[in-house]
Length: 316
Figure (cartoon, rainbow, N blue to C red):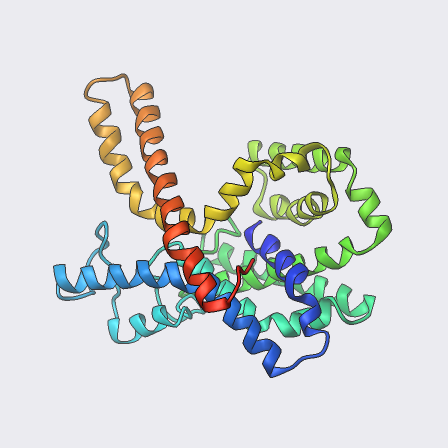
């Protein structure tokens, strides 16, 4: 859902910017997107690379907790610094950053995608949507050939799968934005019953272990319903805790991987004095509290001030 939502937000925020392409508009857009992605990513990546060099003196090592294992550092490190590693070029030093790398590619393609999906006729938009669906199907076929358990579980940026998955979802997000401008579509998808129906279908699909493609098909209508509605489940996403989680979500995403090992240690320690179920719940609660606190701090101390300094204002 992340890529669909990202495409929708970019279309909503910057779609009009590329009604007529210009290098100046592209430069301003990419500066704001860099201000959104790079500060926290750069701090975490720089700290991880510095620690690895100090602690081990090399990068071609098995994956430890904090260190950055990169088998070909002379090419892998520049790729990670430029955020192009998951374009089929190199492993990602920070595991979750594979999706940020592919999203960075989608930003460069955004003017072309916006021109097709937002500023051309209905046939061009329909063709773009069909191309996105075809790209998703090609991603599923690629991963099925690689014997992946889930056909859209594309995260290994050393193949084309993640980039294909990102561009497909991003394009569908632009298509959702175009649909949301239709008064008839807004009336239909803005009804609380529509949002509840999609949410229930999504919950059922996940509970029943439906195929990735079936689950993915529900993401665009879910984004459409949440964007057009103001009542029912849409209100839940406007509550202060949900808004706060959205603000710190980037920090949550980048930092959570560093707490997986402490979670295992906390679970093992708690099981010495508590039943397994209680121990696991306590350990998960403690680590989650630490993660939320760390994410809030990194948002306030790194993300927000750096974004203000680099972009001149907050970027979505």
